[in-house]
Length: 343
Image 1 (cartoon, rainbow, N blue to C red):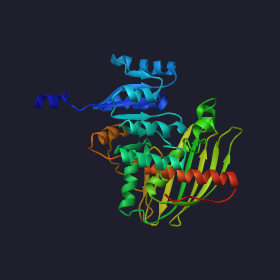
Image 2: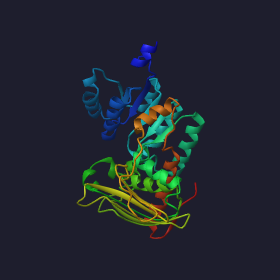
Image 3: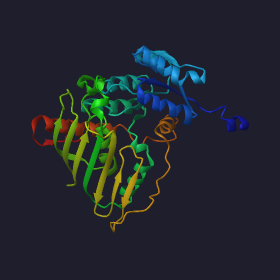
Image 4: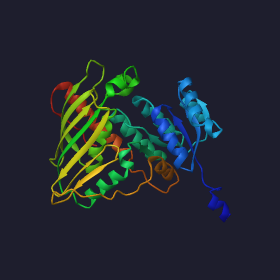
């Protein structure tokens, strides 16, 4: 038996299903297959048969087996015994799919934004608690060593009181999302501010734990049905202020950062992690910040299912995102300062 343990032959396998087999699911699957030995992907669902076939061919045929495939996620949940599901579908589909997966006894890793309605966020949180299941939101930042480093600065008091934040994300989003569901308000729930911009807002909220109370925003639709370029100012409960720019049209394929300045220190970090800069209480830039090693999002999800970890990005961050976005879009629509509703 000891030899079997060493070889991993009696390793507990976590049975996973995927709802949605688009580009981001390719990323998740590759990491599960290459870096999470306890994970076993046993079922896939996507309503696009050609896309599902391509997904199977590219990712699973080299391994010599194909997971069960379904066009309807409800059939997958009904027919296959699963420990967890990864949901990566158009934003407005997240709520019902996650509710059904939780009802089927599955833990859920849910792509961002978690939902696009505040009442849906509250209902999901309550349902996950009732079912005693993990609901983890797939923002990459909270699963990064750079975010862990910044979080430690705040927890150790090395930032002091946060004074202001400056956040900017630029991406050629308009051109790469033409003729896709991302420019359909009924499926996306919003435009670039709710899509890639979700990373920016999550970074600000997650790393400061500040609660926004007022927002003033402008949105430029650029001739589309959804917001493309957005500028916003935010006032937080402590009096701290933020300026935010989410750009979806221009000659930058991708660039993002959040600068957080406090009374005793400051940091700048990418919204996915990837880099971090740190200034100490003397205003000096810290050379070579030591960024801790942390498990991948995929490993963490499996560890949560096995009861040996907690998610660093639980569903409360999906609720906070939805509350902020409601106020942002209200301000852009009315041309007035909008209040952010309390949790």
